Length: 272
Image (cartoon, rainbow, N blue to C red; front, side):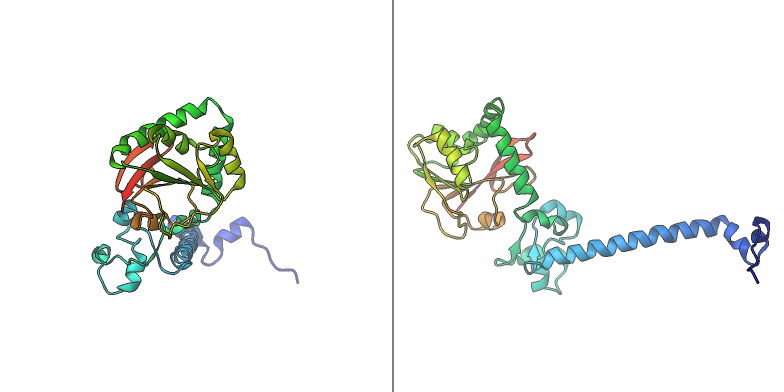
């Protein structure tokens, strides 16, 4: 026997069907559907947060905005070392040997030499190919270097890390420090060849990856914005007497000057 089918009128008259016509029931169903999606999204974000907080061991992030808004959540290594301490006291227990990141956990994929480094390299190549951009870039960087230079002198030897693609830092320091020996350290041979065409024999070129953990026989080290390494470790333990670190405008450290608000970039000076 074929199953009986209810007409629309019969459907409305079926036992319990009145519940589905109630606005409150429909609203509850809509709420539950939306809540389920948010619940799953929340679980996914928690999983990502946990992954990036522990992928290199317990890793801390010391950005003050993040920690003010999220109850010192960035002091993760300190929390592991002191699980019973109140969150307001975690900054007092800094773990000197902790892994650190300049990004909150959900953005920590930017620590990898991936999107950020590729984007910055692409911008460098754009400046190298666009002649009218070069004076603008040099002018904004020269202002920041000039403002910090009185705190650096005397400077006899300078190491510029990764400065081979468009060597603006070397061009500026050749002008500001005419008697100093300048060395460009870059692991990319093509970048060094590009710099050599612009600078000639006025600087020394070293084709190797910069080892930030080793002391440097220099008065000044300059770290680029696209530095592929632990920038926080350089801030904590400067490899030379003075270090100039290109960083994002929202990461002030030590003495510093904004290079350009349009470029979202600043130059931080840390001393040993």
